[in-house]
Image (tube, rainbow, N blue to C red; front, side):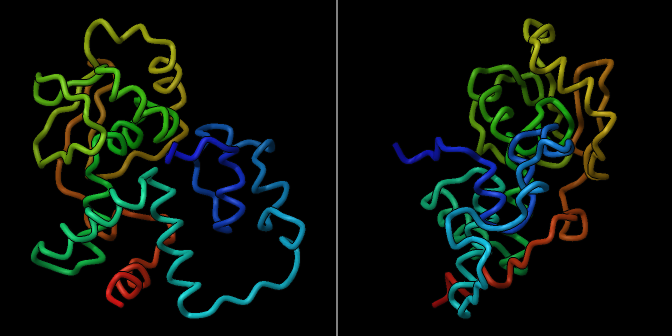
Length: 208
């Protein structure tokens, strides 16, 4: 099975950055990255030197794992970003942000991207009134994401909406929690992404 099924806290430690793969737990003292902020393995606390290729690879792996994509999915999205007018790196990050599973997570309908992907695949959401169960669906400006009426009592969704007050919602999205819906006010720009990412390294890696 291609999908990683091991402990996700090891991924944050490997990439030396908190990727918020376990939702609210990442904001507590139980977060493994806070307790052991060094790479996993017996040599994790030793001095690590990366080559230029190593830095590029780690950055690609970090972004890919943050959004929960497999290598082929990530490469296909990069090629699409490369064909799109504009800066390739910024196009790539914009497309990652526009994914339906990421949008559901960003507006607070799920506690993590993994949970959001699970909810999308099980048909809990609609886009402009039509059920969409494809996590990679790219939202457009003006789209309305809504929780289906029969899903509004789902424990995971209710729990996520309770904790959304502790999370900052991006300006390009607008949440109407009382109506169980969210609106895409605008397409995300590079400035809307606050997580430290160096997309330039990914472009350099794939351009070799």
